[in-house]
Image (cartoon, rainbow, N blue to C red; front, side, top):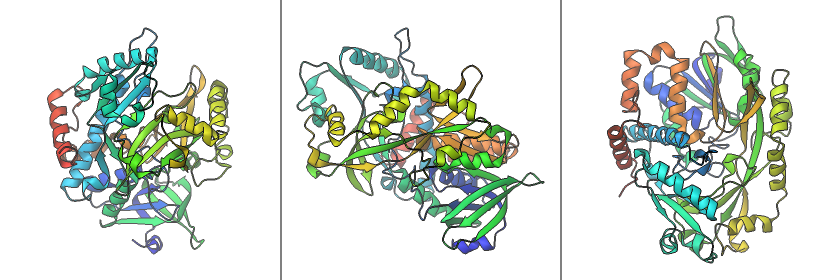
Length: 500
């Protein structure tokens, strides 16, 4: 729809702020649940999915905990905690169910346009790390969501799986790897664009690019007055909304603070930037077919787990390594250097200071990453690809993430690496804060948001039936029900063309 629709619509049932995967998922679900909803969507940039959802800004891994070692910490007693891995694996299966529904209904294009089968692997070296990975494998292999995971310490086997990783490696060094063929690569940018394309074809839905939401303020009737500036013409307008979702990535915190809801008090943000090394040698790219995740460096944030990553970007196979973390005061890749300072309020200054003091080693690590030379980056790459040549790789800027800082009754303030949904008590406004594994678990996150913010409707027989149509396992546990999980995985793998 054209931007001049804003001149005609001063009322909306739903306002979505930010044209990323979260807003796209929520909008698509709400429109399926209640087709007569009016939805106005605003994005300050001139294109959709240009920040965290863009292919080059997002890790692209269908996060299912198959390979991400930070989801399976080793405890002080030597055991490996797999509870978070099970939860994330279950959530990604739910996400695939919703995508499969949309594909079946021909509301999304061919699955290969946004999802591709790519094996997920974990790779480690050294006696302690090998011992950890074996314990992790043994714990995960007992659970049906990780059925089919393979483990090997044998050089010949690993050479077949990941030749680039093994060639030129010191044969005296003990290594091991796990492999899940069910892994996927997801182009969340392409998926987001397809979801918005579908929504714009529905009645009562308008997307406004180059429109910056400058304020959200509570009306006397408990609805919300949304102030919007047209960045192209310079004009400003307001409209009233019954429900507002702030899915603006790093920009969400500022708008949440402006809403003034009590639930927003005490939240702060810690920005983390990123960079990739991108391979441009086709012969090298063709020799690698996996997402190979390793162990994060001591002191590094979880989203900076190094990986040698096969990607499908715009229909073409790519190979990336990273991300190299860094520090910037911007909350968005195309944000302002004043973003961090502008987010500091009386209500969150104490938690932010406490979290900052507790995470001085992290800050020091991020600053050191920013000052790395190309030689330093190549040295890190050669730990995963010993024969890597600098002339085959160039540096590209990845996305900007804002990690959640929140009040803590014991510590005063804590820095959290995850996704947080903040909602008003009456459910009329919600904001999504944080990062990984957000995009991959977007459907589960939005189901929970809808159940909280549209409580009465969500519990109605009509919406319950629609939930179960969109997500056949809705209301049941894929983590606990082996047969249900296997049936769901078999169905979605076929619909999404993840099996031959």
